[in-house]
Amino acid sequence: MVEEIFYFLGDKAIVLQINPNSYSLENQLRILHLEKLLHTFPEVVDTTPGMNNITVVFKSAEKLVLRGVKLIKTLWQRTVNIDLKSTPNILKIPVIYGGKYG
Image 1 (cartoon, rainbow, N blue to C red):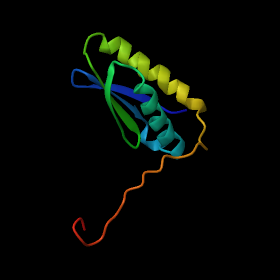
Image 2: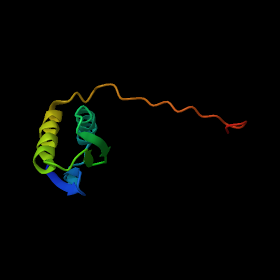
Image 3: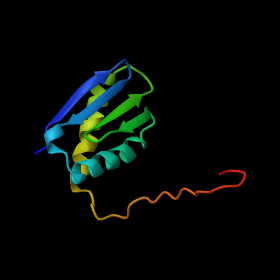
Image 4: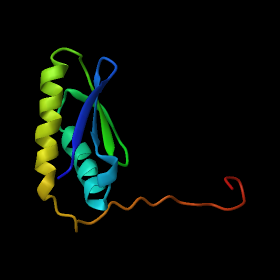
């Protein structure tokens, strides 16, 4: 069981932090999946995932206390059954040595 801690960061942000002692690849993947789910909601402006937390910034501070925590909790619970064997995102960064751009 993962211990979840919610706290506010300023007027418009909520942080979901999981117990640092429960860090695992599974929890990291859950956080990344949660980030994708959160971006489907128009009231979410930005997200910043960490090793054992995610910061969620909302458009408005109105009703943030009730709606924001409830939204994050609901979506976090949905990530329990994610497919951990899904294909990872591959980011290719071209490298140029020497010349005009090197």
